[in-house]
Amino acid sequence: MANAEVGDDWYGDDPTVNLLQARAAELTGKEAAIYLPTGTMCNQVALHAYVRSGHRAVCEATAHVGRTEVSSAATLSGVAFHYLTAPDRGLLLGEQVATALAPDPDDVAVVDLVSIENTHQVGGGSVMSIAGVRDIAAVCADAGVPLYLDGARIFNACAVAEVAVADYARAVSSMMFCLSKGLGAPIGSVLAGDREFIAEARRLKILFGGAWRQAGIMAAAGLIALEEGPARLPEDHANARSLAEGVAELLPESTDPDAMETNIVFIDVSGTGRGAGEWRQMLAAEGLLVTILGGRIRMLTHVGIGPDEIQAALTAWRRAAKAVATIPSR
Ligand SMILES: Cc1ncc(COP(=O)(O)O)c(C=O)c1O
Image (cartoon, rainbow, N blue to C red; front, side, top):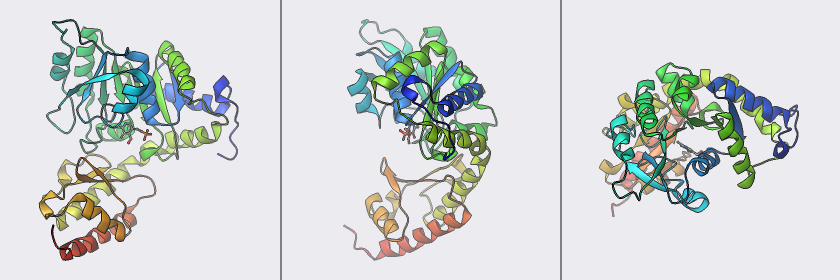
């Protein structure tokens, strides 16, 4: 990072950013790619490019793009969502998407985009297979609607499905992935697609205030993340599974380690008679910071979290369980 050659990305003349974008295009097999500060900005740029204000995007009911980012999509682009509830861990099916893409008999609701998420965060880091993505792609192609992949953690999916990222990319119109999160860069995400789409994405990146100077300092870390990150992900998956197994020993029924595929562990503490907020407080007092999502406790593994850290986390859980037992229930 210290030695990165830099320029002004507004003008497209930061050589390290350009190198990262070329590498991302090559890896995904797409014509072009663009480096953006966050995964959210990739999603928002894609929504703005595809979906006309007042039209809809189809997504899974708990997808990041449609829930966490719902106000961004409304504010920046006037996008409404058609939510579909997946039968299994957030993984949409082609037949569900087909129903959502059937023409509105009243000619009012118009769908401009289908968005899928792989791995699916709220689904517990679940992996959509290539066959599953292709089913949805076929339905979208029949309806003439583009298919976008929120692949914030697509490399985690690739590690489990044992396929190249280009295999997933080939099935969709465009996609994004995060260089931060599991791949280990401190910042940055990439949007990839055909040349025309990326040219529009560049315009929107500038419009949304995302053109950055000397971004090559960060892009240099992104290049290392792409080089070294993917091969390391199975370690994260094994560590996440140990963490789930340890918590399941302590709190049976709170999580299913056998359902764990990647690096996201959800713990459902509802059976303990204590709220997730109380558990979070007790865990924080033991030095373990967790988030709460949809009423469940969420933990993720990534670079820098090894077996020792997993053991430390489990010690915190055991101590917190003792402390929780002493609080009078409300
Ligand atoms: C599936 C998914 N998409 C998009 C994002 C947004 O990425 P960022 O936090 O870089 O904006 C996240 C963040 O957790 C995510 O889990």
